Image 1 (spheres, rainbow, N blue to C red):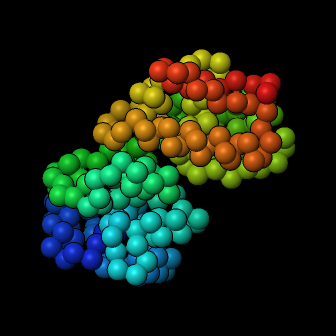
Image 2 (cartoon, rainbow, N blue to C red):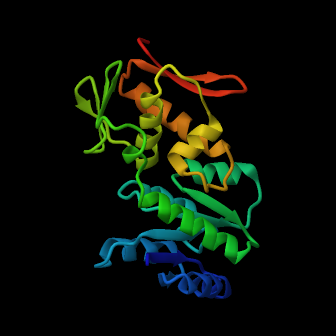
Length: 232
């Protein structure tokens, strides 16, 4: 059983989501705006395992909620949006959402995506990629057990997906990994989203590493995927 927060101002949609997720045995809390959602996440005595977040909310919208949430938490987020524009979907992923669904959606598909995300959260990628708990490439040192990254001896805080993505690259340094391979290793084989999810996260990881002075490069291999190399 998971504790799931549904942030949705349309009561009929919120109750539909609640109905289907409760059938799965989950505990559901519904709030109708972003400010209340953030207060709930901060003050609730029991941790929230997943957030279903509507993009179009009164006051503080889903973008703002996701941005503020990602500053302090890695709780998985599924974003619901009535906007079918690819730019809005990519923006949601770039803000830190783990997945998205476009309204109107099949509630059974939402249940399947919730199930897949919770399963991945219970099976961290760092436990399956590499038996050695430490990886070093260039001036990067990853401690997989402690979930820490050092760049030239200085700790760099990464979000969960960024760390998992870097781990996948470092464990296969010098080898080209396709987007599908990265989706399998980092998001899990049941992920139903777009491979552009990988592109968004790779771009963000590159920016973080560049700003920290990392001596590695995530190369784009045209029409194939990405490769991590050292000695930049």
